[in-house]
Length: 188
Picture 1 (cartoon, helix red, strand yellow):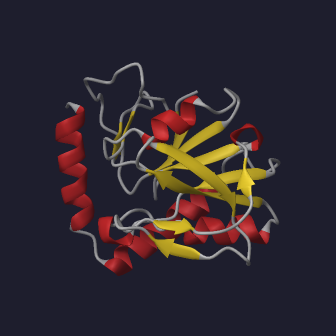
Picture 2: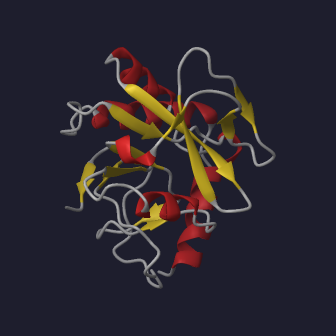
């Protein structure tokens, strides 16, 4: 399957999920994340879910991070440069949806990429080698390439991986893990 077919297939599969099903599967994903060997780290970057695109709801993971007193980092998209600017998420941060439905900080303490230990990565599809398909703008590929190579990259998906996704290029960054409601896939 190529990236374009995978993108279309998984957008359709996600669109068929009810809000209650998304929440149920998202809680299962969050619970499976507890089985990862990542909890000794300090700085965790996580995406804020686009509800109109039926993404994995990251609130349960954010609650876990908050309960473990971890630094939670979220992004603001720059649509001119396709880069992400990262901010510490705390009680003073105000979030506002941009025109694409992405919740983003409009204030806060900007964070340097070099301190990020773990990244929870949004995706539409992935394969058994850890290749990831997003929406096609390249925001996360640019972001992930600029992190320390030791940074742990974890995809979150409602679905199991494809056997292979074709037309992956040199700008695509592989995941270390992907967490589904039923299993953790390890690509290391």
